[in-house]
Image 1 (cartoon, one colour):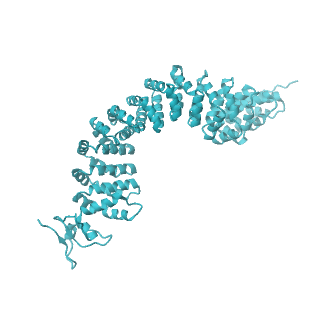
Image 2 (cartoon, one colour):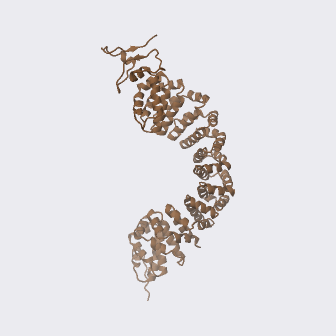
Image 3 (cartoon, one colour):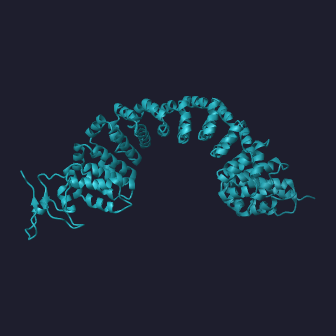
Length: 590
């Protein structure tokens, strides 16, 4: 007669996994499945009792019920990280993949794919599934009549395609049609996973072409138009955003009226994540000149400017970055400047540092090589907030604020207004920055504003010449070149030239000019300018003056100094004791 065994101890049930009787094995697996379903703690207990090793042997058992129940335990336990680790050591993927054949039971399909989906998160398992031919059966199961099998299969594929090798492989295995079919599922979780998978694989141009050929773009646009799918609109846009990066695909969307539909949808959407992701997609796509043209034809600028009024700081940042990218198109730059500069200037006063940086970067791109836009910034009362941005916390905001002010300085009225706000005093901090872009742009700005005698006096009085001279030591070529340029401009008057020489600018410039690698046309011109505006030092160093050098009151000849020797001022010389050396000649006709 049959002997009935009942147990409340998991250890006893694990022992039953060694039974030669199929019925006992099936019941033991079923009991372990129920036990493991109750929580992570129970899974860890079974792991400690060695249940997995016994269950692994049952994966290839001849009895279908035993095999099914064993796989169910695997599927439910694989969510635990420690279990996953042991499953990798046992190398179960091959056994699981072999269960995915069409004639196998649907419950086996469900739990085998569940186990693979849990394991596919880890890179080495991704490689094994690929090498062991797991992609083909997983793609086939996307068309399974069972929704759980579909869900687990698409989730597993989603994890697998994070690796570029698998992205190419699923494309070859024609994954697009079944994924698009899943978008019609009645289960939102399946739709979401299908969209997330499409978003990853559509990063590849070849996949985007296949999407178009399989009418995937129409399918995605219909989802956007359907309010029932509003919870999936962010993911749908992410896929379409990738498609915008490809000229051919974008032209296809445009020709079918899809781009107009897309922009119309975006213009009425009030969901910040949708607005932000749309702006980011435009930014990425706008790096291609042909795509910028298409965007301009479809008046994408209007949409971007509307986003600047959003209540979300993230949306404002994304919109400003997209405006920066679209500025590469001259027609867009004109439209954005005309309509967007007052809004951008207003946003310079934002309390959010990221917004401030993105906005001032957009203004840099709008005003570069555009006198019209530069005038618009001044007319929108942008000078004061730009000056305030020089005290921002982010280096990107500071360097771009300097760039905009420098662009504005090309127009005389704006330059005078900027100088009246104390630009040279405000540049001392950026000149001392440790960021090379800030240093470079600050030195460039000194060169731009230093053409005015009052500005040079201001820089001298606020101690700005010291940090400028320090930048001559920079290892960054652009910083060094701009610093040389600024020294050349500032050396235009005698007092500033003498102060620059006192701070060691001459010695540094001479050293730079001796190096083939470090010298530039500005370093040579700066040295010449400093000497021409400090004739006593020029005569002492060179032993001659040129025909254009006119001696005036205050000139003195203290004899030629040796290389590396210190050139002393008249005051320092007058304090020295009398010696038997040649007299110092001082011209003082007054």
